[in-house]
Image (tube, rainbow, N blue to C red; front, side, top):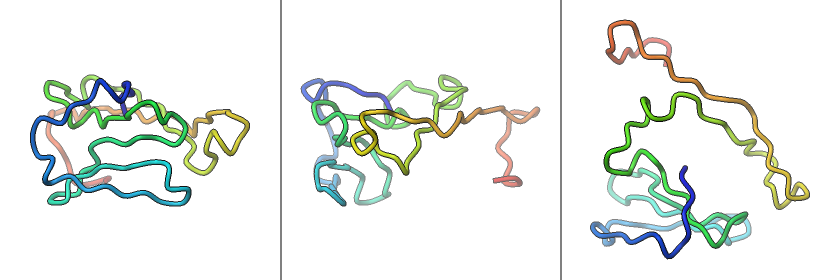
Length: 107
């Protein structure tokens, strides 16, 4: 996720295909494609003045090349329920296969 101010986001195409869901407190608003299901962006409960955008949806971003090491948030302990502390569960590391091809084994 890449965080940006709400006013910095303009959806230029496909707004008719966007759906939104909210759960638990109803504060966070998650926008996703109603046709393919990809999570596009969300307005987080912890940062309601920002959108968190899935970097994979941004033109020109090569997720597996641009983000080799990605911190993984602790999804069980929300910062607003944990005295404002953001916890990490670990780091996701991408290592390409020696031949540069995707392999199904090990997924």
